[in-house]
Structure formats: structure tokens, C-alpha cells
Length: 556
Image 1 (cartoon, helix red, strand yellow):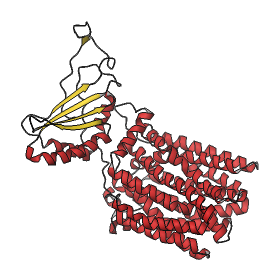
Image 2 (cartoon, rainbow, N blue to C red):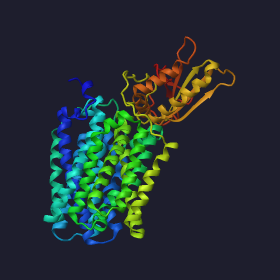
Image 3 (cartoon, one colour):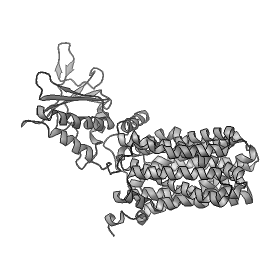
Image 4 (cartoon, rainbow, N blue to C red):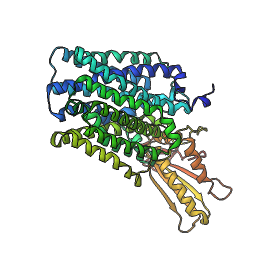
């Protein structure tokens, strides 16, 4: 079967051996993580009756993702994603082993429990962007949406059975066994990544420094309106829906009067609903737009959270959690697909890190807020407020309407050659100033200006700053685009980062140019003294020998 034919099937990515092995191993690691979560949450309820401290377990696991995702995304884009994943899993395993030993020795305290949960969360925060960004290297582009959905299914299959297994393990052998199980279940994923022979495409340029890479990722997101909207909606959904994960131990204990097994069963119901939602995601996308699907999920999820608040029966609570799980997974997967299909490969890790930071930050903040409210007004009232916020969240579409999902991360078909220069530049020479002169029919000035506003975002996404567009007051046909790049290597990166869609946009702008001569392009070095390796050619009056700037190649 061809890849094109495979693309529409949710299970098509599993035909690819590398993805299948890593996906299967990740299923086990997700299972272990959720078993550990049951043990940690229940262990905290045994050490303290404070609702806010119980909710802090979820915060400790998710907060590292919010705090470290930006750096983790930059690292995933700078280095071999396989090696980054191996290092991240090592951190998580070490945290899990330490948690197991301290609990086994009987020295566990609420503070230590939160510290070790934070350590495990930190490892997963570093692992997440590298793992998700590498999915596009394991499957063909047409199978990417299904692969993203399958990764969500992996987590939620684990969620559907992991908590129930965790409840049985905790009830039978205590939290120590749950912590040890988590450490063991990380090993298959560690082995799967180790044996993966990733094809690493060498870059013509050395990797950016970490600080510069972080700035590049932030700049790309800031200048990408679709990604900004998706991240904003993700954050709101995480905050509003975080009440369920944070308060579910209290729902099981206080509202249903159950124990660890009841808690595990409720988490299992949530996970089962999540699997159902993921399996039906393709059908949802086929019949509804992204905005309509997100609205529907928010309203149904909000109503179901309200049922959790008033239900005294485990069966009714379990049914409500089925709907919550289905809507939660559908929403988050739609956001994830939107980000993955909007970010080019060079910044995919950082874009996914921003997505993870949004959802994890939302859950972390929401868990703290809902835990605080539960301590003061009770679990029932807190859940009712959370449900009302979810039902009202679609009003955000008035300002932040979900964009249409499309594949805008395709690499440019034509590789641009580096411009010829006669000045001896170093990698850090800069800033580089680029000026491009267009001659435009005055009758098309408005259309040209509108096109150039989109060109501006494209340039700034890929590394330019200080972008301006000026029109000659003596010659209205003459327009000058001007922008800066921090260094010579930053300028070269800016040239090769443009996707095919952005190249088409730039060619559209060039079509406005009049006359037989091409647009005039100047590339200049600002503050040249001390910024270049001066090579003696022609002495000036001061005795310093300099070289003229070269005639430049075509293309900005």
C-alpha cells in the first residue's frame, strides 16, 4: 500500500518499524508513569489531609514541563534528538529509583515526594520535545497527523488501565511497588531509542548557541499568529480542565467514599474515554472545523465536570469521566496537530516545547488554583466553577479563533546558495543589514503593501529584526525593504530556514517589481571595524588596507 493511501488510517504509522518499536515502548513508559502517579497521589493523601498538598503532586509533575520546555525544545533542535531522549530518560529513571529507595527506607515526607516528582517531571520535560519532534523522522508526512493521534492514544491507553493497575499495586504492595514499577517500565523505551539508527542530516552551519536558539524559537512563535492562537487556547483549556486531574483523588475519597482502587477505576474511566476520543478524532476533523470541534469538546467537558461535582454514585461519576476524557484528549490532540503541522523542521522542537509548556503550565496553574479553592469552598463548588469556565471558554473565539490546520512546515524545494562576498567575514561578524529595492506600479501599491506585511512576519520568524518598508517620496514607484540579522551566520540561517510556502510568498512580492532589471539587493556590514578579519588588499589614507563589498548573488 502506498504512503498516500496509508495516510488516512489511524494505524498507518504502525507499519513503520522504528515508529512501532518506539510507540510500543512509550506505551509501557506511560503506563509506568501513571502507576507512579497513583502511588504518589495516594501516598500524599496518607501523609496529609490537606487538599492543596494533594493537588501539588500534579503540579510537581507538570510544572517542570512549563519551566523547562523552552530550553528542552532548543536542545532538541540543536542536537541529535535520539541522544537528547536518552539523556532525558536517564534523568527520569534516576528520579524514579531515588523515589523508590526513599519510600522503601520509610523516610518519605511530603516535601521529598514533591522533589522526586519534580525530578521525574524534569526528565520528561526534556524528553517530550525531542520525542515528539522526531515523529516526523519516523513516518512519512501524510501519516504525521495519525502518528500524533497515536501518541495521544498511547498515553491514554496507559491512562485507561494504568491507574487501575496502580490502584491494585498500591492496595496490595504499597506505594513503593508503584514507584519501582515506573523505574522498570522506562527501560524498554531507553533500549528502543538506543537501537534506533537515526538518519542525521548534517547542517551546513554549526548549531546555534543555547541562548540564541531559545530566542530564535520565541521569535518564531511571536511572529506566527496561528501558533500563538493555538497556544493561547491550549493554556486556557489546561487551566480550566486541570481541576479533574488535580482533584480526582479527593473525588474518589471524599465524594465517593472510596479508596485507592476507586481512584484507579476513576482514572481508568477517564483514560478509556480518552482512547475513544482519540480513535474518533479523524471522524471529528472530517465533519467539523477546528474551531467547532474545540467548542464542542469544551462544552461537553464542562457539563461533565458539573456532573462530577453532584454525583454520589461511582457509576455515574465513571460515565462522566468517559466524556471528560474523550473531550480532553480530542482538544489537546487538535492543538498538538495544529502546532506540528505549522512549524518547520528547524524549529519543530521549540514549537512543540511551547505547546507542552502551554498545556503543562495550564494544568500546573489550574491544579494550584483548584486545590486552593477546594480548601476554602469545598470540592463540589470548585468543580462547578471549573465546569462553568469550560462551558464559557468558547467565547474566546471572538478574539482567538482556531486557525485552519494545514501543512505549512514543508522544506523549500530549492536550496539557496550562499551569497558571494569579498569582505573577509567571520561567523560572528555583524550586524548584517539587507536592503532590497522594488519598483512597483503605484496603482498596485496597496496590494504590494499587504503582501509585504506577510513577508515581514516571514523574515522575522526566521531570524530578521528591525524590519522596515519605506517609499521614496520623490519617486513613488521606489520601495525599500530593510532588515537586520545579528551576525553573518544568523543571516545565512535566515536564508535557508524559509519553507516552500514562504518562498512562494517572497516570489509573489517580487512579481510586483517593474522593469527588465531584477530587484536591487544590498548586503552590508554594520560596525565593520573589529567585526571582520581584515585582509590587506588596498591601503586607505590611514594606512589600513581594506576590501570592497562584493557584488551579490540573486535572492535576499
